[in-house]
Amino acid sequence: MANAVADFFERRLDGRTTPIAVGDLLLIAVLFSGGTIRHHGVAFVTSNPGYLAVTIAPFLVGWILAAPLLGAYSPGAAESSKAAVPLALRSWLLADAIALGIRATPLVHGGVQLTFVAVSLGVGLVGLAVWRTVYFKLR
Image (cartoon, rainbow, N blue to C red; front, side, top):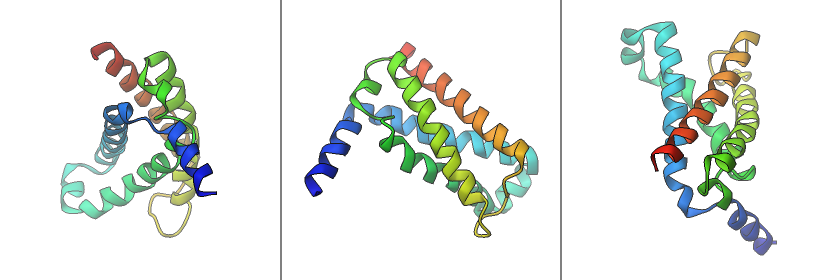
């Protein structure tokens, strides 16, 4: 069983995708930080850093769980944007669902309003697609 798990992750995690993974995590943090600042202002966010952390955390957790499972860092993702972008987009669909599930609990503020579902889905999809496309153009 342990060997099967190791084989599964060996096919889904390629060390050459490390820069992409770091960029993905930073992008998600920046996008949702920007949204929080837009809604609450810089003064609120700087005086309540825990609020920002709790806002971003569900999306980072969702991404950390979904991306390796769905192959966002598989060997193909290291080759070209043609492979890397679709892998990220399908991973974001699951990551966003996980994040929204976390936000729906009383443990996290924010809730899951329909408009936020659409915004978080759209912002993540567009952000990841643009980031990964730019990465391969500049590489």
